Image (cartoon, helix red, strand yellow):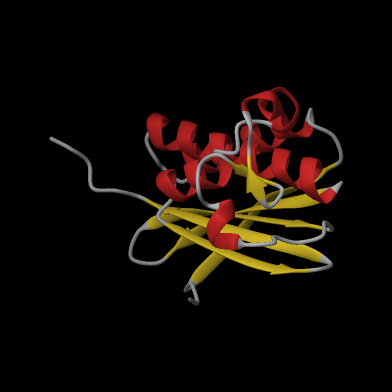
Length: 150
């Protein structure tokens, strides 16, 4: 999908798990800056942190780009590219409880996370695209402004 106006809000190279905090802050500021409500900005920040964490855990390093989108309404796009081995099965990766191409066992959770990250991103964002090869993956997620409740 092409967007009529896409402005770079920021970019961050993710090398270790501490970078997820910087990515979350970058995404939160961009969301608030384009007028999204605090709750939406917090959910977008959570997704940015999860993307950064996945890039480091599974891809050794990655780059998170944050874009402000302007079409009929405002939105945020998160795009995270990594240099990992790619997804064995994208649909399985979107299923809670999966990590590294297999279902997690209870003893795995302390080392590999909970296996709920991509599923959470799919639930919190409006659009999710995963492009994966054996030399890396690009995950793109978009969240659009919602009508205000009265």
